[in-house]
Image (cartoon, rainbow, N blue to C red; front, top):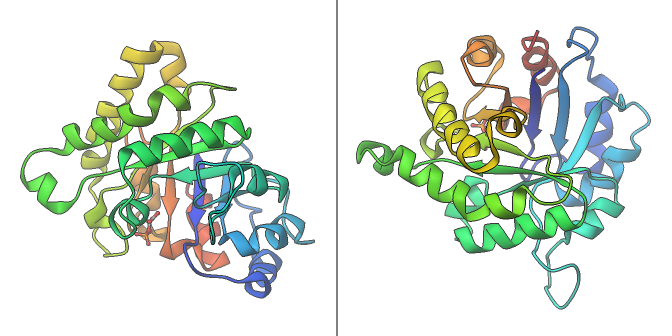
Length: 248
Ligand code: PGA
């Protein structure tokens, strides 16, 4: 089973969302693959209610605040996202960490809120180019995982990880399948230490960073890669469908 997720970032308002689902054809996608789209918060309800959305395509929220409600102008809470019909939530995306300065501690608080609201968290981790050059890939991704792992494994216990090297996001640079597998094995090893082997085996670890129809099949075939988190190439229904079809 593979998970194919599309992170639309700040693209696609409600009108474009309807058009996307009108055109999305997932006929060739293996029945065992799980599909998730993360639209901007203002488009979640439209995505959930889109008459042409195949119910196999689940909807998630890209970011939440750690509180359930309150005086936090401009923020979205997990509970509200759940009420709007989202069932997944991204946390710790590299743009949240590096553009908006989110810390490991804030990411952990968000993980707790997401689990409490009954959403399935997808924790993103990944190193910058400088960190990779300094030989710190494992140290960075394990630090990011450790900060949130306690919260992630509570509740229903289902959660996903996404390894997204910062240098590969939106740059056209893709990690090699071997790079992705190595980082995924590091993450899996930590999950095994903390959760035990059988629970750890049930946590899908996705790769993200310049995934496109041309490279999806080889990344998805790499050991320990259980799916992909796609940014730019998920915006067009044809390319998202082509990537999902490669998950067979
Ligand atoms: P990209 O983005 O596919 O455009 O590189 C991936 C992501 O940020 O999740």
